[in-house]
Image (cartoon, rainbow, N blue to C red; front, top):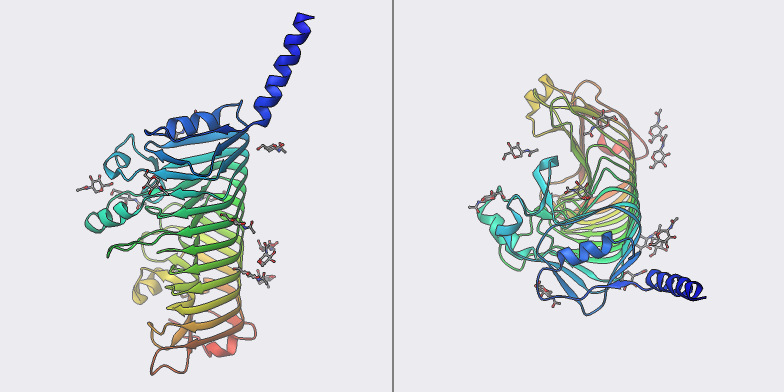
Length: 400
Ligand SMILES: *[C@@H]1O[C@H](CO)[C@@H](O)[C@H](O)[C@H]1NC(C)=O
Ligand SMILES: *[C@@H]1O[C@H](CO)[C@@H](O)[C@H](O)[C@H]1NC(C)=O
Ligand SMILES: *[C@@H]1O[C@H](CO)[C@@H](O)[C@H](O)[C@H]1NC(C)=O
Ligand SMILES: *[C@@H]1O[C@H](CO)[C@@H](O)[C@H](O)[C@H]1NC(C)=O
Ligand SMILES: *[C@@H]1O[C@H](CO)[C@@H](O)[C@H](O)[C@H]1NC(C)=O
Ligand SMILES: *[C@@H]1O[C@H](CO)[C@@H](O)[C@H](O)[C@H]1NC(C)=O
Ligand SMILES: *[C@@H]1O[C@H](CO)[C@@H](O)[C@H](O)[C@H]1NC(C)=O
Ligand SMILES: *[C@@H]1O[C@H](CO)[C@@H](O)[C@H](O)[C@H]1NC(C)=O
Ligand SMILES: *[C@@H]1O[C@H](CO)[C@@H](O)[C@H](O)[C@H]1NC(C)=O
Ligand SMILES: *[C@@H]1O[C@H](CO)[C@@H](O)[C@H](O)[C@H]1NC(C)=O
Ligand SMILES: *[C@@H]1O[C@H](CO)[C@@H](O)[C@H](O)[C@H]1NC(C)=O
């Protein structure tokens, strides 16, 4: 009987432990270890940072290999502004790709991060420090690493020191209803604050989000496949970008099956862009089946861009055309106005010589130029045969 009672109590306890979230409170010190411990604990399927709680994270957080985990951030998760700590070898996690680092690795299967709260990167000190140290390695706020079935939703990210999000070696990742605000309050701008970079990952969706930042809104890096980006409002960014690809000798880069649709792009450097390296000592790859559809752009320097001679002079590019092929690309229903910073040109599809771009379709392009003296927008192309209802806007493409 006693045994049965204790079994009942045990089961009840287990059920209660299962149902009740493990709740974190600010300790006044570094909350990183306690947050990480709770999330890694198998007796905490749900971990909550309640509203009104402001966790201070002073050390990197490794939350990988999770299973069936729900992290509900209703309050704030704040990363300390101790640049000198984060750049030491014990500081942020180093990521070999483009010499990046990150405060936080999140991975495993069936992981949800939501709650309506805020991840605060405290980037101001980084923006200011970067102005006098251009090699400063600034951490990415959140990296989804080796994740499968990961959902990040209803989260604000403020003042990321550098990229806001990296998706790396992951599959089936959804970002929904994220607001990103990386703006500097000093004269040093919030550089390289990409909204998302998708790298070596498959089946990623990014949707219904508002981004105010200072670099790519979303970038598709090497081996980003089956990516859907929709319903985004991007302000101040460098656009929705494929690449740059094919940079490193001996490395093959793939970006395939990407759809970016219903994007509002304001005050940006680029709208829809693909860039691939050319030149004598670069890599190779393929960009295939990428569609940019329904972009409404205002005050954008370069609304539509293919640059397959990225960082390469015209003469060098004709000698060493890009080994990163571009195929089956659609630019559809791209409307609005360029800033006119590049003169009258509103679209530039510049391919490497020798048939490196094929099956490029342009339809429903209607762009104006708001710069004085450039009332007639121009559409330029080289080394490519365009199809689609807007092809005639481009006239005959030059060849080199
Ligand atoms: C949260 O704490 C950080 C310091 O860790 C501070 O910079 C930030 O202003 C705090 N946020 C709020 C809303 O109190
Ligand atoms: C993160 O933790 C896992 C599990 O302990 C470990 O295998 C992995 O090496 C850690 N990752 C890093 C980058 O420290
Ligand atoms: C996913 O994890 C949640 C806990 O966060 C759990 O309730 C749910 O049952 C899990 N789903 C599957 C398919 O295991
Ligand atoms: C990483 O940094 C090293 C040393 O500063 C530099 O030589 C290398 O080119 C960088 N790699 C990338 C991918 O930027
Ligand atoms: C500049 O940044 C690099 C990389 O983070 C770091 O190693 C170096 O110490 C910094 N230099 C100074 C003067 O802070
Ligand atoms: C989006 O997230 C915010 C909190 O970050 C929340 O207030 C809002 O209700 C969410 N919107 C939807 C449609 O879920
Ligand atoms: C895009 O946004 C609209 C309006 O907010 C919404 O009705 C639609 O469901 C969204 N699309 C997706 C795929 O969430
Ligand atoms: C496009 O996205 C915006 C949000 O940025 C949304 O309000 C609008 O309803 C969406 N339109 C469609 C057709 O999904
Ligand atoms: C991309 O995938 C291909 C095919 O699996 C592989 O050969 C290549 O090394 C990968 N490239 C990168 C940068 O991961
Ligand atoms: C092209 O990409 C889209 C969007 O990811 C996908 O739905 C479609 O199946 C792809 N087409 C082919 C032929 O793979
Ligand atoms: C051209 O590209 C589009 C978009 O990916 C694709 O649907 C179509 O099948 C391609 N056409 C040819 C002839 O490959």
